[in-house]
Image 1 (cartoon, chains in turn purple, blue):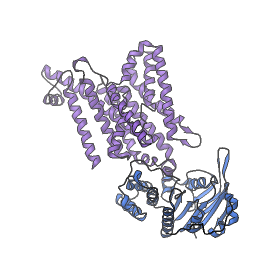
Image 2: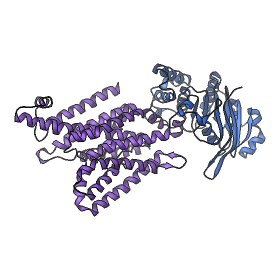
Image 3: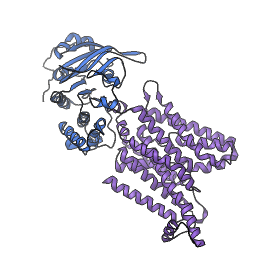
Image 4: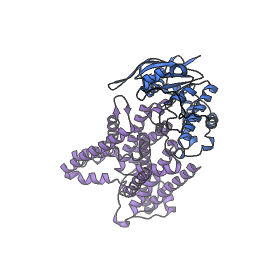
Length: 333
Length: 251
């Protein structure tokens, strides 16, 4: 009941946010005109054609991408927190986004006009970082352990970020493009980017649902989970791989949007509890709602003076929450 | 008496240490088999081998089949294991914790059957009134009973408990072991339990295996194993006769 009510609220927030995103912006369009622009594929008047372009070609794919990317990052964070049994695990903390960032920086350092090569390279970078973190956390006799995974992730983040910074220092011409991409923005995204990422995100999210029960059992500890019939190593590897695919797909089009993967699973765990089946679904919906609203705010908050990267807003929201988490952890101890 | 779980010549080396040096043991249906021995004697390692978690040299057979050849979920439908100090996932209520024990049977019987089994196991272990309580709010004794209900929800014929009463006060120790003994006899389980208290061992175990430095020092009925000579050799202590300062407990 609690989950059903929450799901309805999150869906309403997402749909409402998307509707507002279609109507608001540098050109305000009334909701009836938005509906008309969405349904009329061949408008006759110049105004209707302009509205169709703004609503259908520019704002709709961007809003849908915000929902998709937000959902993917939140599910990625849920998976990482589950598999690492650590409340502070998130794609940007355990090295996945740092892997994407380094890959993007290398591409821009080699050719600073190679914007089109960024998404696939960032995707590969995130997955590569996930595999490296997993490989580093494997003990010869005991397999991968949650604690080693978190520590390996933090170490990989430090190394990849240092190399990224070094490349930026050595290639100052690429700095501006890299910084813009790293700040995390959904500006300029079209249907092409949506169709390029959606299949990965949908398939990985559905696969994540299949891992929900084993992930619940992993919370008992490795030995206990094994004794209950869980194949611990394949589940752990599969979970990290899915988290990397989700994060890679999201970051490849939207850049480094921080804290969605950390904040959303935590907030929702308080409401729906720790079971992963409901938590993954709730996180997908919650991440979608958060990023749609954050992108709407990023687009409209400065009025006609241009927009902010959505990643800055999510980080501004996530930073204080992170501090709250630390405070809470101290209180518990 | 049927041997449900048989281990033969188990050898385990962890790092430079040979933790088990050719241990053999049999667990029989309807019996509580206590594993005792000083710290570091290999009790927990033996339990992990019997549970199929560690792969030792030697053979472990469950109902005549090599445990290493069983699929994990197939093994978990027959054998339940409760580790030392099990972790309760934060935020779960007792019912959700006990439901985790049904994982090996998921997809093999209707949802209603899972619910009935979970309720019956909670009731049998006396935690049905706590079913909506968060595990974080339970006392040590309540949590231990919740974990026992979870193990029972696996519907096992072999039950392995690693130090299930070490963190409990004497009253709860007596309750927990009495419950284990009742369950073992009523469900014809083959139960193995690691214990440290020799008085409790003599009172609740049908059979005892005393481990010392990775080897079986003695095995058999409690009266045959818990002799002064064995205890003095294994634990390095002198056994004194009971006097007026000795407290004996009963519930």
